[in-house]
Image 1 (cartoon, rainbow, N blue to C red):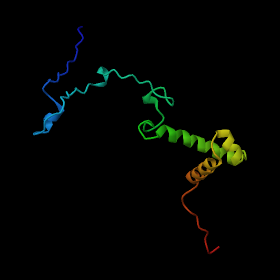
Image 2: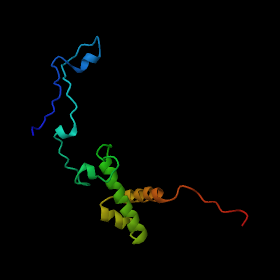
Image 3: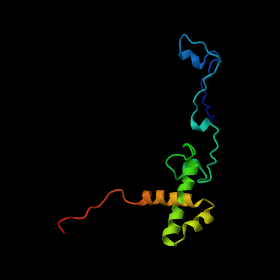
Image 4: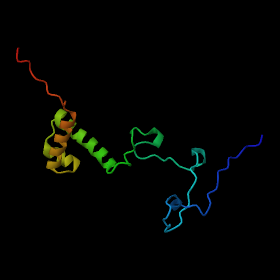
Length: 130
């Protein structure tokens, strides 16, 4: 059997992005590229430090698409660990600051943010009739 190769339309050299704007002169000629199906694209999915492939990523949205996304994620992990060590193992603020290589004030901020994140937002009022 002969394998059929799909051919895609070539873009004309005269076509430019600026043709859709009548009355405007293009400053430089930019050619349109055809949008190829995935089997004809040569994209290598190397993943990142969190997943070996983008298709296996645990995040709903790539953290590299957000500004400071990786930094926020790692800070969140650090803050959770600080809260865990502070509450369960009884480590002091000074000791945590030395352990993580940050200032005591940063440890205090991390504890405050992480506590606020994990405490319930609703207030439960006592029944006055009891």
